[in-house]
Image 1: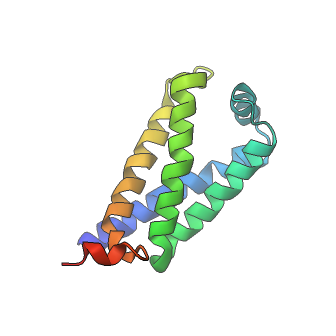
Image 2: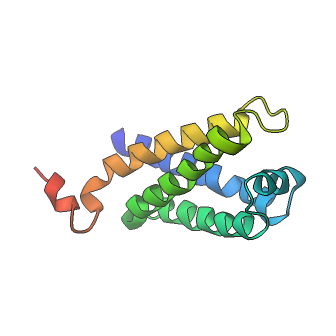
Length: 129
């Protein structure tokens, strides 16, 4: 049961990361607006999209879940920071959906990193009992 739940969390995080790529890579007006507001358009939009794609793939590969989760924490942590400092919770009348999705993704990635902490090189063995 536990392994199925963890697999479900991995799939959910990967889907969230990967489904947003169509907005970033097609220069959707909302995505362009967001990245313009934080001064990262267009290089940041494309670069972060590539990093999200890599993170989503790594989370789906059993041996690299911890890397994907750690990358996701960094990427989504940055998104949350931008919401709290530059963008606001609600962006272009979305009712806070982007922010809530970012927070949920951050929490799920943190859970995945915690569950896979033993897989982290050099420090993972400190978590063995």
